[in-house]
Image (cartoon, rainbow, N blue to C red; front, side, top):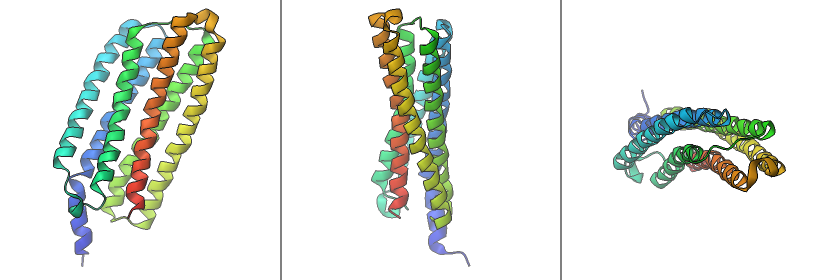
Length: 228
């Protein structure tokens, strides 16, 4: 005979947590497009950068709509398998990933900078590491659906925690690469000029925020699971 509590939790989980997975996927696609825009920027393709910015802005708006829908339909804490405040905090940080991706794309449209090969290379590597961080976060985010469906079985919780740990590790790689990028920009200050240096440093920081929010969202996910 099916455990009635487990059955009830399964029904409840379909409302708040399936849309969270949908939101995570929209955030992932937004960051994919951001990554494409960074690549186009490094190649000097301003027309493509501008076109991708409009796509990214539209995708970020779509993610916002899903976020608002989740907030409106999220059940009260006493009928949710996890704390409502933790879920909302998790959602905010996840949404901030898309917000930061849009900020990056906006920065790309403001000014094109002619970069030496060394700076191009490290920005492309940073871009790839940021994208990988978001991918790791979305994998961890999707795992929560399985965790809820199995009523927080120890095995599934452990799998989710391991995925979250990968996000932390990947975010560290982003931090290391970001520092390398900043050093490369200063090393090439004479070629970039003061305005170019300032613009690229701002771009590097914005890219770092994309990964920062992904890690923060995953840490909220860790907290949601740890409270069970």
